[in-house]
Picture 1: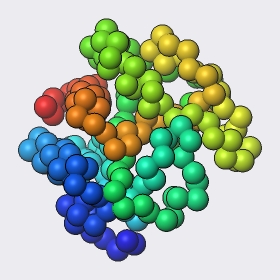
Picture 2: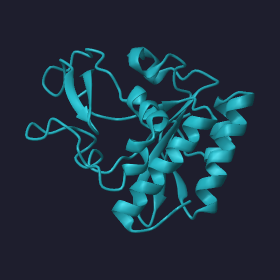
Picture 3: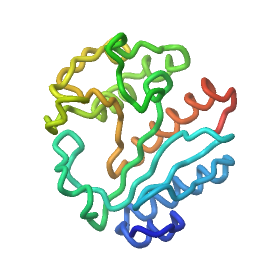
Length: 192
């Protein structure tokens, strides 16, 4: 769909049963916490708190795990799937890229709760996008090694992000924690 659409309509158009209920619950959570959700481009919405984008939500993404996503599916949405791209403080500035001067992600202030919880930390580390050797030699490839909160990750995309594809209930809780920490650090507000 290339025209503007409410996210609830996108959920009904692109998701299936279990994902519909989970996505609607997540959108209700955002709206209950005064986060607006606005269409931004094809099958993509942004969640905004006090004028700051805190995450992106995309419907009709591929169902292949993000570490082996196929680029061809970018313009051919698949019914049944969705992804949340939460912003993480210190990696969202500059278009989610790691600069040449800063090849690691060490912003720990505020993220102590996640760093201390191995289950949450492992969820986030497993979502950190791997390099797919997309062929963009000017801006990307080959993959880089990053130190993400004290853990070494190999062959990661230089455009660091943590996509949550078809998040399960535990992953959705992790997203909510990430969004809350981001809002506390960036906006000095608590959203949940």
